[in-house]
Image (cartoon, rainbow, N blue to C red; front, side, top):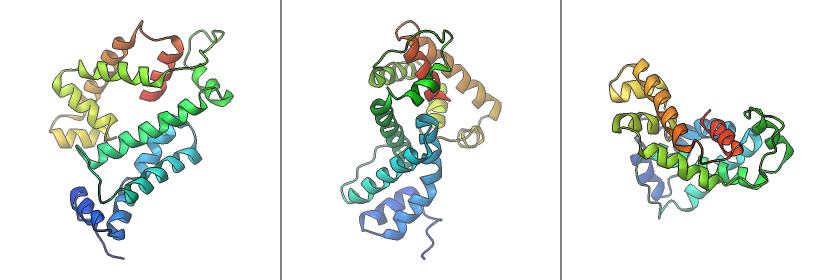
Length: 197
């Protein structure tokens, strides 16, 4: 097998457009584990998460010649994972297992969870909170959440201390949480906490 580990994502995408299966395999190996791990955090299902990531890569291969990605490939793949995971949650929001997991985060366990939770509305409030963040904090948050980089990786990329990264993310979560406070139901707030874990 041809070794392409030294190539950048952009170089691999160019090869992918030429139907290079080795470039596809390299991208798959580079991001599969991180995407599945992220999907599991949202869906709480190993099998569904594997299916979600598989679907994204099948789509990537099928659209390889017309693929247009704004920003980094890592960010694109993580966002795709989040979108498909949220779609899965929307389809299964009424299942007992998911509702049980959601109620763990609600202070009053006797309170009924709404039958339908608008994940789109939740995402809009999260996006609004992100837009309110100071520029540097927003950059740190996006690298953490959209590209799923570790504190150390963010520290190295931005040339700031790891402790600063941790503090920035913590402050970002507080600001975003405040932006949804009072606007969403208890169930929505609980789901928000679940999504940020």
